[in-house]
Length: 596
Image (cartoon, rainbow, N blue to C red):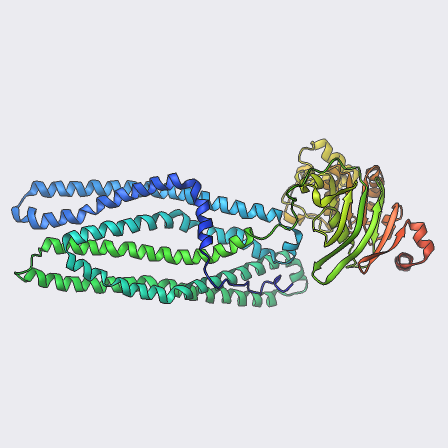
């Protein structure tokens, strides 16, 4: 699909949804008691610091003219105590809010990651993995500062403004009104940049997502890149995406840096005006304004614009965070299409009879992959599915495991509709080995045990011996405890498949699905593996997808699938006798091998 590309921007929301902030508040709620404590702590500190300009005013107007050193020392001592209390309060605030902020980030990241575990394969088919990863890591991290400091600072700064206004009005109402005349100008600036700033950060998040997607794609495909000498072209694409990201970032930052210089200009202008008016009022014998009051008032002016500046920074952070929240909650809100029904019941112990009743399926509307498929697989038998690439072979086994929902019809196991049972109880009774033999970072022992976390070391070794993996494992540095990298880069393709095979066998499944299980195994190993498989397949219903038809000759039933339908069905001898599609496919492989 078009959106599954690193160079396709995601859709931008036109209007800001206040519900996103309400949802964020839901993550903050569990920590409200701790936040209230921090707020009280900071408000007490702010209230005390408001007294310092008053001390200065009394020193200037009373203590110095009276040469009262005792009073001056008392005011100086009180100022020092207030400063020490404020420093202690700030330290406690930083410690508590850092902890709260990181806890909220952890909760948010945990929710998005857990939701990603539940999303169907179709979600990952439609999106570059880098664009998914950037939401879990980068976007959530970007909220850290907002949650750690922004929220508490905003509340305390609003209270500080209220306190400061009271002190300023108490000193002189006229000068206070002059100070407040700068606020309407600031409001106009905010209104002008608000929408432009939000849109700029949305675009920046898109460009960051595109860049991250391409980096992830390039790392995963580095062997192909170097094999086809594409380094220079890839670097050009990277530079183009990086330049686009840098340009979007710089445009967004320009709007951010428009606000606080505006505040500085307005505050400087109002402060200068107050100095001019204040000095004139002091010199005017008819006006009662002292030097101490002017000094105290100008001190409050600095304190008045400081929280406004902090609020402006919070506003910038909020707009940035909203652009990330849109993407985070978009992922959390992604519908889980394959999930337990409200009345789902546990899957009873599986015996292994599987029935497809008029099953139709499509990945995209209007393009059917399967069309009215009907068959019954008997308990304990082995069924092979063959056919050309893209015929729907893997789709059939994916529907048995319910990795996708059918468009119409039913899939039954032992007569039970699998859409009505709990997914966990269904899949724990299945063993699945897909075409992609994914190896996780860790030891070989851990990778095999992934199929059954309660299995003992002896069980793991027994499973490895069954699939002929034991010998090559023991030849490695630390045997079963050899560390392998993500995707098993230290292992050959055949070794990865054998480990994945052992993983599937260790689960001791009632239904076994092998999708191209032996495609990367050499002929000699395949012969050995077949002996173990024959023992494993006894008593289990098994589905094998294979292009190498020599591996499925002994299957109880072979289904030839093409154009969304089962064109032929029977055992090897029966299908060869029919001389139909399977016969032609088999003979083409036989002639090819004979020619070699």
